[in-house]
Image (tube, rainbow, N blue to C red; front, side, top):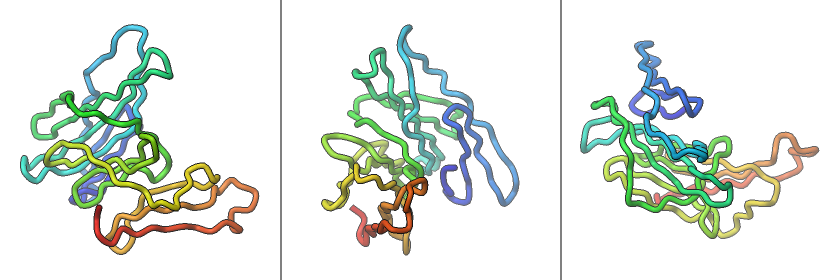
Length: 187
């Protein structure tokens, strides 16, 4: 599920996407992205987002994919779907770090979409719908990605927040503390 954005929800399995209005119960299928990849290469969707561009008065879907022939040598590809034109297009000219999926890792807040990504450290990658530009936010210094906890992005008191919680499949999830960082001022 992505959203809500102005009451609309996008439902996707990374291949098929449905835009749904729960109030009216109307829905619309978003066409599959038509862009292919070279022979012997593979594509893996790593980030999907949905939001509203207030300048163009348009809803947009963004798909971030890893394209690779060798798993160790990946290129990131960004495709955008504009609802008003019913058309996919490629976004070129921006370096995008490796985006990785965890549960609760894709969230729309204010206008940008947010995902976890990896540069030298783990960051929150942001995509501004109006300008179609990427930027990133640093995680708190005390964050240790590999301590066995799960991570997520949530909204707490109308603030973007980062949560670290025990793996629910661990032997003793109740014995581990939950950490929540609330970004009182965005950025």
